[in-house]
Length: 88
Image (tube, rainbow, N blue to C red; front, side):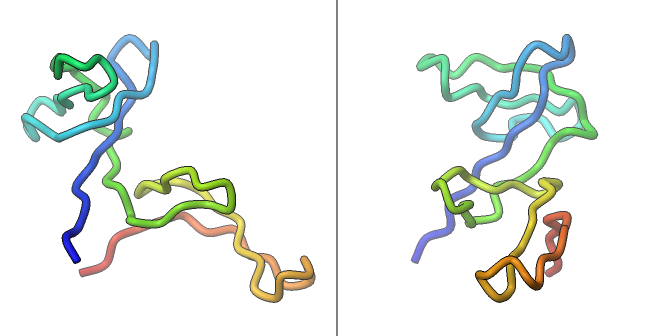
């Protein structure tokens, strides 16, 4: 199974989230896939997160740095709030 490498970050002007490939790690640039042309967007470095290969109950992608609520028993009696982090 091939891992999907995808990043996201908030643009420098706080205008929007952009999703795509991390182009320049030193300037935090993401090749914005939503544009269809692959425009480079400079993003705030502290907002960059990599796709965790997980989705929430609605099918939305989960990224590093996301805050999620986990229901361990599916009845709501054992919930936990967690921040998604990568450990090698």
